[in-house]
Length: 245
Length: 232
Image 1 (spheres, rainbow over the protein chains, first blue to last red):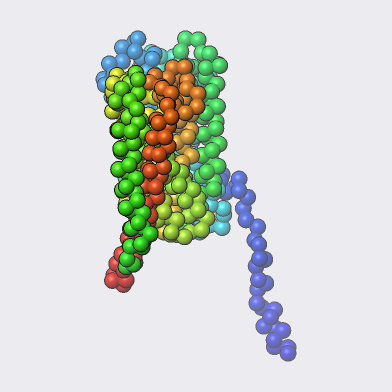
Image 2 (image 1 turned 120 degrees about the vertical axis):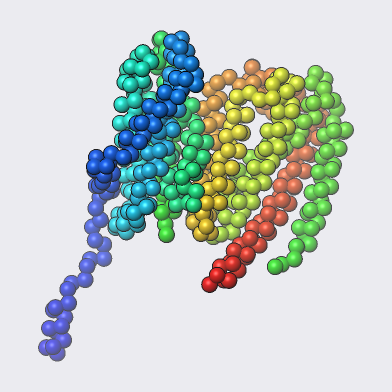
C-alpha cells in the first residue's frame, strides 16, 4: 500500500487536456517575423524581385517605344504587369523555401491553427510586394518622367496587392507541392487573379489621368475590396486541405 | 472490370439520335432569320454548347466542395468528368461564336465580357489539368483539384462582372438586351422550339458523356490501385 502511493507521487501530473495555444494573432505575427528576419539576413527574395521588376520595365521601354505621349497612357498597365510578374517570383520562392528545407513540416507540427500559417505567409508576401512597389515607383518616375506620386494610386496598389497575395499564397502552397512547381504558379495564378489586374489597371490609370473622377474609380475600388474579402475568406476555409499530409 | 450497363448503352443510342435530330432541327426545320440569314443557325448549337460548358463548371465547383467535406474519391471522379466535358463543349461554343461573329460583328474576336470570360474560363480549367498532372498521390491530387475548381468557380463570375463595366456588344436573346448589343433578334415559335429542343438534346448528351467518363474514371482508379499493388 505504501509502495503504491510512493510510485504515484513520482509520476508527473498529466498535462491538462487543453493546453493553452498561442493566440491566433501571435502565431501570425511569429510567422511574419520569421519571414522578415530570414529575408533581412539573406536578401535573396527582394533583390531578385527588384532586379526582375527593373528588367521588365526596361524591356517594356523597347517593346512599346515609350514616347512621352504613349507613356502617360500605358503607365498603369506597365506597372501592373511588372508587379504581377515580379510577384510570382516572390510567391514561388517564399513557399519553395519552406518546402525545400522541411520548414513547412516544422510549421505544421507546431500546435497552432493552420490558417494562421497561411495568414503569416500571406502578410509576409504582401510586405515584400509593397516594398518592391515602393522602390520601383520612384525609379519608374525617374526613368520615364511620369509623376506617379498620387495617394489614390498607392491605395490601389495596396488593395490590388492584397488580392494578388491572398490568391497567390494559396495557389503557391499548392504549386510547390507538385512535380512541375517551377512553371506551374503563373499558369495557375494569372487566370484566377485576372479581375484584380483589370480593376487595378483601370483604377490606376484613372488616378494617373489629368482629372481623376471618383465616381468612375469607385466601382473598380469596390471590386478590389470585394475580391480581397472573398479570396481571404476562401483561403481561410480551404488552406487546411492543402497542407494536410 | 464490370460490363457496360444496359441503361447506359440505351442512353448512348438515344444521345446519338437526339444529336441527329438536333442537327436536323437547327439546319432544316428552323426558319432562316430575316436579316442575318443562314449564319444565324449557328446560334442553336452555340447556346447549347455554352450551356453545357457552364453546367459542367458549376457541377465541378459543387463537387469540389463535396469532396473537401467528405474526402470521398467518387466526387473527385465526377469533378474531373464534368471539367473535361465542359472544357471541350466550351471550346466548341467559342469556335461557333467566332464563326457567327465574323459576318455579323465583322471580326472573329472582340474583348467583350462574355468572350473574355469564356476564354479565361478555358484557361483556368486547362490549368486545372496541368495542376492535376503534377501530383502523383491520388488524394492530394483530388484535394488540390477541388480547391482549384472552387477558386476558379469563385473567380470567373468576378471576372465577368469586372469586364462588364465596359460596354458590351454581345446580343442578349433571352431577357432585356443592352442598347449597344449588335446582332440581336427576336425568336419566332419554330425558332423557340428548335432552341429548347437543341438545349434538351445537349443536356441528355452531357449526361451520357458524364456517365461514360465517370465509368472511365473508376477504371482509372482501379488501374492505379493495381499498379500500386504490383509495386508493393
